Amino acid sequence: MYCNKCGTLNDDDAIFCEQCGKKIVKVDSSSEIPNKPNHIEKNDPEFPEICNNDTFKSESTENHNKGDKLKPPKKKRVRPGFLIALIILLLLIISLPFIYMVTDDKENGGHKNGPDKKDKKIETDFHKIEVSVESGTEIFPVIQKYLAQEGKYGDVIWKLTNPGDSLRTVTVTSYITNWTDPVSKTVNLRPKDSITIEQISFGEKLLYNLATTTPASLHLIVKEGDKPIFEETRQVEIRNVEDILWSTDEKEFGLACLIASWVTPRDPAVEAIISRAKKRIEGNAFTGYQKGTPQSVLDQMKAIFNELREYGLSYVDSSIDFGKAKASQRVRLPRTSLRDKQANCIDISVLLASCYENIGLKTAIILVPRHAFLAVRCSLKGKQAFFIDATNIGRSILDSVKDSINAIDFVTTFDAALKNGNLLFNEYKGTENIHFVEIEECRKIGVRPIF
Image (cartoon, rainbow, N blue to C red; front, side):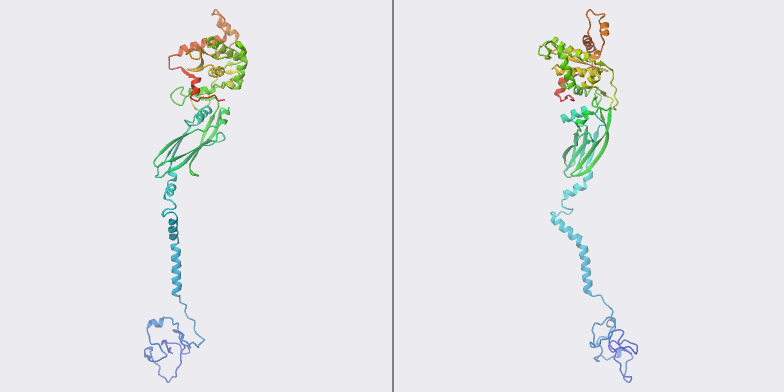
């Protein structure tokens, strides 16, 4: 039968319309039933006035028979309000990052790239600072001490370049593990600027290294703020405190002034020799240049020479060196020569120079090819000097007698030392093969005793 409302054809025993859900009213068979829904009278109050396809397909929300409790299940439809709320929520989620960026820009002065455009530039250029560093492979304690006390030069040479457009502040640090404390310096690098920094790592512990060579680690660090931008560890060798480096370039004795560090007039071992030697001099006292005569100077020189001779000091030709540097050599400190009772030409020269400086005499160590001897000024203001080659200090009495056979008077060992010194000076004077290291002048430029 047909629905009285929408005209849909339903089963004969249907109670409700399958399409609109309206209760179907049965009519007598004698009544005229239209064959088609189009024949339904428009004036019939039981039927809707609009009869088109959209009406048939849509779901009716009106219940025309409110008294009827039995109703067929209706299809659920999505409400427009729910869809609108879902769309708004999605839009909010998508827009959250943009809202945060706008808020952050306002809090930081309107910069688009964060708190500060300059800070952003620093972060971008962080690893662009160019760092190069030069350092030696051997550490000579005496050189380190001299450089540290003068503060003019360094054995670690940094070169920093700022290729960026902003001012950068960096700190360079260097140290030798277990040997020196860290040495740091902070500098400001202007844009497109380069700067050179020299550092020296020194610790008193270096002066007590008596081993031939000791391996160690040199640490090199560059930081911008607290963040490292360069870090490197290099292997170095700590040389014996008695090793000297004569030169670092083609000049043969470019660092010869450092030999003045071996002249240690206040060393207790030297003081002990002076204390015993003064008994050999008239008045039991050393007066230096106070008497003003060359003979008084010669007498003081002789007293100390003979005390060392009686002490048992003898000459031993030993200058072997195990380092990498070609121009390096071991020079015994006076305390070592006195302890071992032996010395070579340079060893005994610095020992005598230590003793003579202790009593106020002016000395100079003279370097010639493969040899060294000593000069002592005859007077405080004069230029004349006594030259002494003390390598014969351990000569026996028999040798002294042999040297005196062709001489009218007996030639003492001290006199023979003076003679040999004069011969050497006359042989090399005026040539490029003789080098004077005046101890007093070395002191003026900061070369002080090691101890």
